Amino acid sequence: MLLSAKKDWLGNVRGDILAGIVVAIALIPEAIAFSIIAGVDPKIGLYASFAIALIISIVGGRAGMISAATAATALLMVTLVKDFGLQYLLVATILAGILQIVAGYLNLHKFMSFVSKSVMTGFLNALAILIFMAQLPELLNVTWHVYALTAAGLGIIYLFPYLPVIGKILPSPLVNIIALTALVYFLGIDVRTIGDMGDLPDTLPIFLWPDVPLNFETLAIVLPYSLSIAVVGLLESLMTANVIDELTDTTSDKKRECKGQGIANIGSGMIGGMAGCAMIGQSIINVKSGGRGRLSTMTAGVVLLILVVFLSDILKIVPMAALVAVMIMVSIGTFNWTSLKELRTNPKSASVVMIATVIVVVWTHNLAFGVFTGILIGALFMAQRLSQFMYIESNYDETTNTRSYNVVGQIFFNSSDKFINLFDYKEAVDNVVIDVHRAHFWDITAVAALDKVVIKLRREGADVSIIGLNEASETLLDKFAVHDKPEQIEKIMGGH
Image 1 (spheres, rainbow, N blue to C red):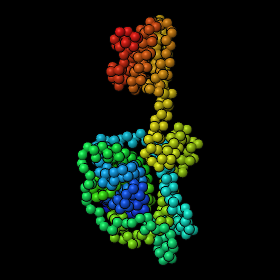
Image 2: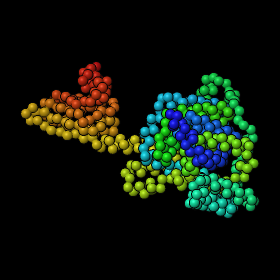
Image 3: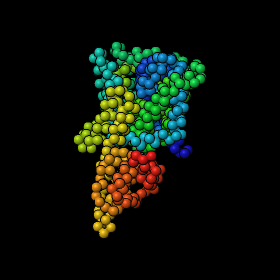
Image 4: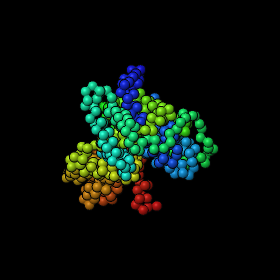
C-alpha cells in the first residue's frame, strides 16, 4: 500500500505538476460557464472546482482523473437555484455527497457492468461532439485574429512535441497557452480573454453551513435534486474512470471513487461551492499532458485557487482562443474515429446502440440520458438474441407411447411465447417428458409458460413429467409454479 501511495504521489512529479497547471487554466472558463448555467455567481463554480479537485486527489479511487464543477450537474441545479436560492443548492450538494457515499457502501458501482463497449464508444463520441460544440460561441461573430490564434494554438499543440528534447519536456497545451498569451499581450491584439468571462473571486473560500432550516420540508425540496445530482455525477465519474483506465492501461477502485466523489461534494458544499463530478475532457487533457498521479489532480485544484485569487491580473489576459485550441484537441482525441469504419463491419445492433447513445446525448446535452438509452436498447437487442437461441428437440418412443421434448436455451419473458408454441398439444400420447437439462428458467413469465404447457398437455390426457431442472430453476418453480398444485390449477381452470 505504501509503495502504491508513493507511486501515485511521487512517481511522476514533473509530469503531474506541469499537467496540473494546464488543467487548472482550462478549468477556469468552464467553471465560470457552469456557474452561469446553474444561475449562481462565478466564484461558486471556481470554489467548487478547487475543493473537489483537492479532495478527490486524496480520497478518490482513480489517480490522475480530474473532478470539478461540471455541466452535467450544473444543468440539474437550474430550477432549484431559481426557485429557492443558493443556500438550498448548498444543502442539495451536501446531501448528494452523502448519497454517493451510501452508493459506494452499497456497491452500486457494479452496475457499470451493464455499460457495453457500444455505449462507451457512443458516450465518448457524443462527448467529443459536445466539447467541440461548446467552443463554437468563441468562434462565431469574431475577428480574423481569433481564427488565426486558434490555428496557431493547434499548430503548437500538435507540432511542438516533435521538437528535440524540449518537445518531450514541456506539455504542448501549456506551451500553447503561454505563447498565445504573450503574443496577445505584447502585440495588443483585441480578442476575448478569461477576464471577459466574469468577475474572479479575490478572497479564499471559508467554511460555512447553509443558512436554511434543517427540517423535513427542506429535505423534501432538495432530495429530488440531490438524487439526480448523485446519480448523474456517479455515472459520469465511473464512465470517465473507465476511459482513463483504458488510456493509461491501469485499473482503479470504483467503490472508493463513489465514496470519494461523495466526500468531495460534501467538502464543496461546506465552503460555498456547487456539486460536481469527474470531467472527461479535463481528465484527457491531464493524461495527454503527461499527468498520471494524484499530484496532478491536487496541483490542478491548488493552482486554480492561486490563479483566481492571487494571480488574477495575469490570468485575465489569457486569450480564450488558446483554451479553444486545447479543447478542440481534446475533442479530436476523444472521438473514436475507427468507430466510423466499424459501422459497416460491426453487428447492426451494436451500431444502433452507439448511434442512439450519440444522438440522445447531443440532443439533450445530458450524458446520463444517452447512456441509459444505450443500455436500454442494448438490453432489448440482447433479449431478442437470447430468445432466438432457444429451441426444442423432440423424439417419440413407440413402445411406451412417450413423446420426449429436450429443451435447449434460456426461457424468459421474451422467449416464453416461442417456448409454448414449440409443443404439440393435439398428439395422442400417454406420456410426455420435458427434459430441461440444457435449459434455464429465469423469471415468473418463464414459470407461467411452463405451467401453461404442462396444464394443456395434461388436459389432452398425457402424463407429464419434468426432468433435469437445475437448482436455480427448481427453486423458482417451487415458489411460483402452479402445475403441481391442484388447488391453484382449479382456480385457473375456473373452479371455485
